[in-house]
Image 1 (tube, helix red, strand yellow):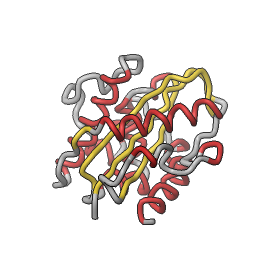
Image 2 (cartoon, helix red, strand yellow; image 1 turned 135 degrees about the vertical axis):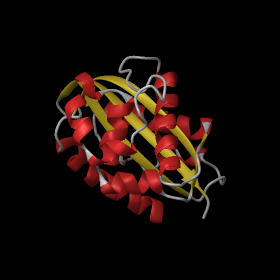
Image 3 (cartoon, helix red, strand yellow; image 1 turned 90 degrees about the horizontal axis):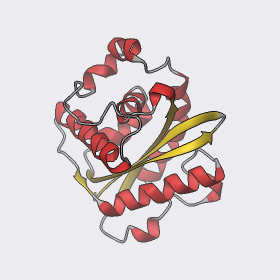
Length: 188
């Protein structure tokens, strides 16, 4: 229930994060949360907007773990199972054009039947951006600017992470977008 509440709150926060000033270079340097973002060059491919999806997902994991380390939390380990769940969610969001944690009426997480009993708590962050806002770094900064998304990133319960990025021709009126899905899970 707790994870579902976190995910539901994250939907409302995304609207706030997306309505924030553009995440271009000038706003990255003025955001108080930019100090929680790994310096450029620490996470390979984190500024890449058109790299391979697996390299970009690994860059996002690096950014998340750098931030968690900065606030004294343990690093998360990559989970192919959570990455697959993230990819399923991204595919559903893209296919029906419904940018939400429950796209087209699906249950959250999109593929919880594949998660088994390894975890009993999980969270999810969604992001999409176009133009220069498509990179793992842009997604991470948007989440850092949102209290609800930071709650997902900073939970001490998480042990595993999976992520997916999907290029989409359009979503919510924007064209040529990158859609990010981050799944985290643990046991309490």
